[in-house]
Structures are given as C-alpha cells and as structure tokens.
Length: 171
Length: 110
Length: 90
Image (cartoon, rainbow over all chains, first blue to last red; front, side, top):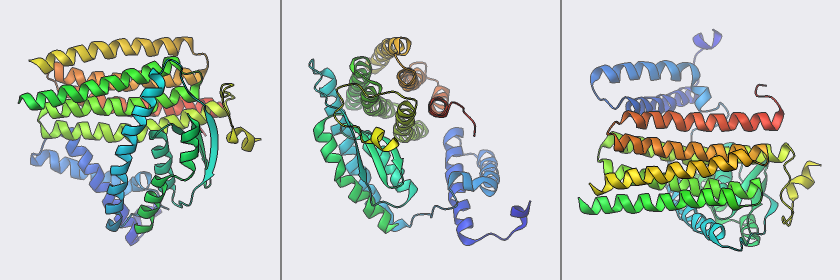
C-alpha cells in the first residue's frame, strides 16, 4: 500500500509509460478492432496493469534505452538476419550430408558487454547463428557448444558482439 | 495477384524445407546438444518463413501484424528455451557424446 | 485456387513431421531429448494452427496460435527448470 501513495520518480514514470504503450499495442492487436469502446477498455486495462506491475515487464535496474541506440540496433538486426540464413544453410548441409561431418566442442569466452539484456541478446544471437549454441552465462563468461571446429574458433572473436557493444554504448 | 501467390508458395516451400531439415537433424544427430543445434536454428527460420508466406497471402493488416508478433516471439523464445534445455541437460548429468573434442563447461563446474 | 491446395499439402507434410518428432520423443534416450522433441512438436503445431486459420478462413485460430506459442515456451522453461533443480518452485 505504501507504493501506491508514494510519489513516483521520473524513471519510474517513463517505465510505466513504455509498458502502457506496449500493453495497449498488444490489446489492439488481439482485439483487431478500432471502435471507441474497444480502445477505451483497452486503455483502461493497460493503464491499470502498467500502474501496478510495470516492473515485471521492465526490471527496476534496467534503464530505458535512448532513441540514439535505434540506428545501431537496426543495423545489428539486419546483420543478424543474414547470419541466421547462413546458419540454416550451414546446418542443413551438415544434416543432409550422409557422413555427418561434425566435431562438437564446448568452448568458453569472455564478453565485454555489461547489461543483462545485452548479454541475453548476445546469447540468443549465438544460438541462432552458424554452428553455435549458448549453454550457460556466468557473469561475463559464455559457455558455447559449437558444432564444428571452425564455428568454435569464430565465436571467440565474433563481429556481432562488437555491433551489440555499439548498441549498448549508444543507449 | 499471381506474383504474390508465387511468393507465398516460395516462402512456404523454403519454410517447409527447413522444418524438415530440423526434424531430420533431430533424428540423426548423436546427442542432445547437437540435436538442439538442428531444431533451434531450422525450426525458428522454418516457422518464420511459413508465417511470412501466409502473411503475404492474407492481405489484412491485423493478420499481418499478428503474424509479425508470432515471428518476433518465436525468434526470442526458441533460443531462450534451447538455452534453458541445454543448461538443464548438462546440470542433470547428460554427457556430450564421445566425439566431443573439448569441454570447458564441465571443467569449470568441478 | 493454387495456394489453398498448397496450404493443405503443407499441413499434411507438417503432420507427418510431428510423427517423426514423436518417434524421438518416445525413444528418448534421455529426458532432455524428449523435451527438445516436444518443443519442436509445439513449434510445428503453431504453424499448423496458423495454416488452419487460412484453410478454414477463421482468423480466430491465429489468436489461438499466439497463446499456444506462449504456453509452449512456458512449459519448456518449466520442464527444464524441473530437470535442473528437481523442483519447479523456489
């Protein structure tokens, strides 16, 4: 109850606004209707949920990234798409090769990324790209399962990590 | 709209191919970690590709937006789920198969 | 007319793929293998649900697919948590 009457800090307000926008967009999408009644109910529901549980969607220790990070982020997404297509062709070759030429290994490397979201993004990108799969992240150490020798060598100094670093620096 | 239909069929055929490759990999690879390689990458792109094809066909804005929502969701959720399974598999004592060259994770856990 | 026929054919192929996944889920050999197989079945089911929406012309199935994707993700996370820690809560 104390939280309800306490004055809210600016970043708390910003967090609440971002989650309100996200929840309202999701409502519009699911209801697929743009008449006033649907919009009013959606706004009310989104406002209620974001007022009391915006810290579930965006954690208290995460900052809202600045709009300057958008351009590097889009460039990152573009490169990620290319890498994903390459990864799929790579895996398809390995799977359909009758000799099954795999040489798996579990390697570790350290990252310079700081934020939890950035690290999680790097982990997911590693999983989606050629021949590598994140097993665990402990602090700044990544444990990666690699399908081939080349993939294991490549992931240690990976160009996508530099791109994520740029996004993090701009944010 | 013959061109759009062609694009739909092409995208869905690509998606179907990758989904099939993912399942073949699931059946052929020797241990759980290598199987996960096949399923996470190929399933994610395969499902996304089929959905993109269907989105091109629908021509309805809300339907396309919902398709995009599903695609974004599986691109975030599939690798995260794979990560969770891989860690759980390792910690529950599932050993990588004997052809594995190097195991830095097992060494650091001890 | 051509795309609709192709949708039905795709649905049939995807249905066969789920049976192949089911084979892996049955023979295992380990619990994580089964989780991976069931996760793949979930992804393919999601695609089949969206296909259903187009074959029968009911967009409601797409909403079902969204919810199905979320449940599939959550169930996979819960089962791997159980495998890792031996319990789900705490």
